[in-house]
Length: 28
Image 1 (tube, rainbow, N blue to C red):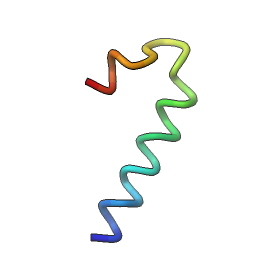
Image 2: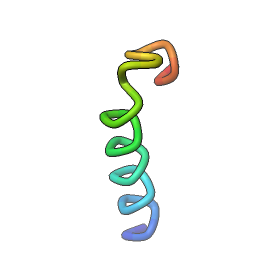
Image 3: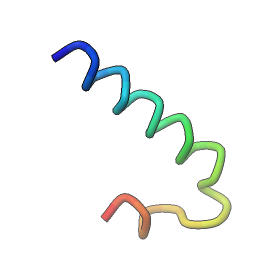
Image 4: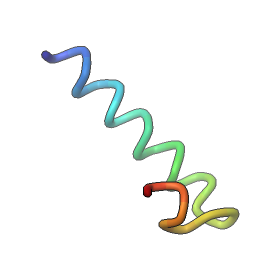
């Protein structure tokens, strides 16, 4: 369960870095 949390954190960080490309459309 902890591993999934780390993956989610990495995903969030990646979105923060690429939020200039797709803000929330990628979140969907």
